[in-house]
Length: 213
Image 1 (cartoon, one colour):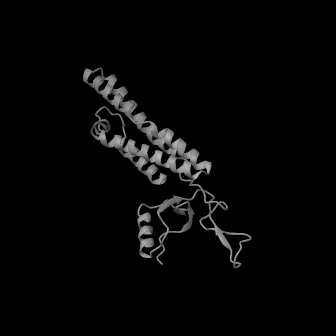
Image 2 (cartoon, rainbow, N blue to C red):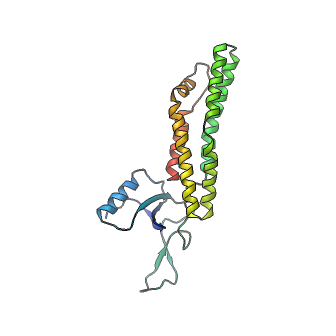
Image 3 (cartoon, rainbow, N blue to C red):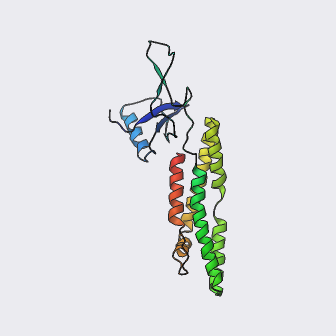
């Protein structure tokens, strides 16, 4: 059989989980799905890819005192229960870093526009401020809830938190797409203000979405 990845595989309810040291690549889920279909594997309704956290082994440990024919049973890393995903840890900090850099650039631009004293520039600063004020804020709470759910060892709470965080990520990406034109004007401003919004925020959001799973 072709080796697609290296790590551990276990079930969480009806979900077949593959946990690896390396961050999961986007194409892995499709490759695994195709392999399972080709080999006519039954009973797999959903596949989830996760990145193992620091200190989590990428091999299943033998379970002492296993019953049966004497062969050692295996268990997922961290004990007899499947590990709750560690991926959400640190997402809030990553998002704060990307967003704060964008906010700083926008604030600098607004200050430079107002400093010109030109009526048109001052009006433009108001438009830029309105854009900044309209940026969705729900992702902060969603990521905090996701990190809390990840530490709770509650699969149901984690699934709900993942869905909410993914939805808020999509809301932010949609906002950036809808306002792409005015964001481009801000980034290409002639006032010497360094503004980076679209690329760093989109990149951060896409990375967050990938880690949420």
